[in-house]
Amino acid sequence: MNNSARKQFLQSNLWLERAEKTIPLGSQTFSKSRIAYPNNVSPLFIKRGQGCQVWDADDNQYTDFVSGLLSVSLGYCNKAVDEAVIKQIKSGVTFSLPHQLEMEVAEKLVELIPCAEMVRFGKNGSDATSAAIRLARAFTGKEHVAVCGYHGWQDWYIGSTSRDLGVPAATKALTHPFSYNDIASLKQVFSDNNEKIAAVILEPMNTQFPENNFLQQVKDLCHQHGAVLIFDETITGFRYHMGGAQTLFGVTPDLATFGKGMANGYPISAVVGRKDIMSLMADIFFSGTFAGETLSLAATQATLDFMLENNVVEHLTTMGDKLKTGLSEIINDMQAQQWLSVSGHAVWSFLNIAAHGKYSAIKLKSLFLQEMAQRGFLLGGGHNLNYAHKSSDIDALLTAYQDVLPLLAETIKNEDFSMKFKGELLEPVFKVR
Ligand SMILES: Cc1ncc(COP(=O)(O)O)c(C=O)c1O
Image (cartoon, rainbow, N blue to C red; front, side, top):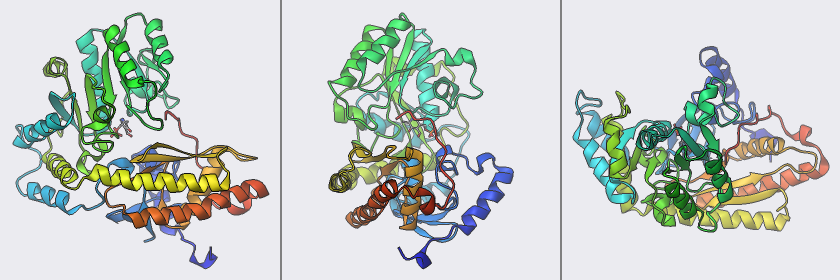
């Protein structure tokens, strides 16, 4: 690359310094913060977006493969969604009584999602997962839960990770992680906790496809032991299939949670499920001033309609298949399978970079992000596709990979990382996927 064309991040760095004076970590979200992007060689603030393009604090342009942490499912500033929101703004945002949109959107979810007989809304994915757990505890009269994947920031879940600062030991003792595609690990949780498990919550899929009928086996185990099965479809919902991963894999849970891309970036989540369980929502306390906020409901309605009318899932799958195939070819051609791999479903796939030679995975990923940012790509851990990504965006990403992955291989071979990397290393974050 021509050095004179190198992107600069002066404004990003200045804003980080300023933000950290009033905002701890300079961000509201760990995965958007300076621990997720190597300082000095990455954009740290976004000013605006359009389709799948974003512009950073220094006016550098990127093709965004993070998509607002998968909340942006159609692309920034989707016209149909924004028009629905603007129309709703003109008649009010948050009211003193429920609004008709609440039932309209609930009815839509019941129509689309196999397990959904009743629905309640929240704002974040964490609202929905935490409500589902409280509901399962109330329904079963039990307290322990088994978890697999990521389920948000609340005590009951985050206490089971290494980011557990501030979580009471009594709460931590109630949560038991198990491993995906490892039914023995869940059996162990059940046998260690002797009929005390209220709920099993898992992402129906993240990096690995279910094997040996794993999801059905989980369901059978839950029902043998009187536990509620919750699929956390915060990401998979409306992405793997309009009826969620539960439709794609043909296993219907008791409850499921949705969020992220259901409103193309507007804040809303939902817990849905069996009527006999959901009815108890009337008695437990899950209640919020903004839970029935109408802009996000109008955005959900418009997003789901747009997805259905435009076969969004099919588009994401086609783009994702092309990306996975192209990337696998690059890795095979480089004979780098020992430290590079591709995983996940086409609509949400991952390039995995493992430690190799003298270098840790963190070091290699830091250099990778530096080089991808220089080539105009905003990336995190995965390929978060949205409807605005077109074939030419996938081609451009593959061209950049063709450049950057051999550059990493060369760095490993020549052991000259410190000559090439100009930023601050990423910090390790807890890994649950
Ligand atoms: C599977 C899953 N569940 C729950 C959550 C929590 O959602 P939120 O960050 O909106 O609270 C996330 C967020 O990344 C998620 O990926």
